[in-house]
Length: 115
Image 1 (cartoon, rainbow, N blue to C red):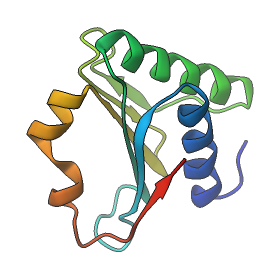
Image 2: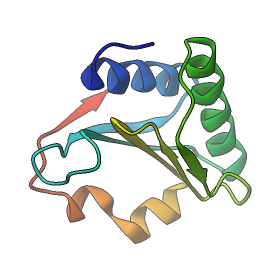
Image 3: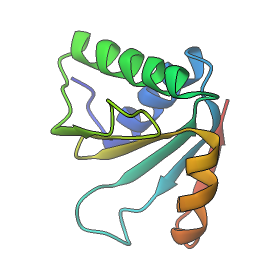
Image 4: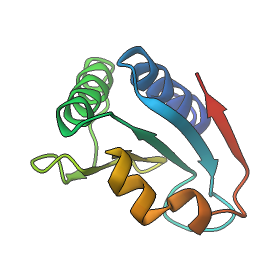
């Protein structure tokens, strides 16, 4: 089990990067919302790649004793949400990410690029 929410976000970012996720961003939203500390946002080039990123994160964290509280969108794989409570992961295809623009919606949150 990963000890801190920041450590969890970093671990997820590492796994996503290893699976060739694009434009990985970690937003510190802990002071803005009451339900999580971090959003991790990334893209896969296609629905198939987005699903592969999801599968890699799920598998790696499961092996480390952590399962998401819920997962949504994995079947369609255009926007996959994985709720690890301290970190909510958003995996997008490029068009879907451009449409929803989460980085701009949460623009006041401190952000960092990964990878």
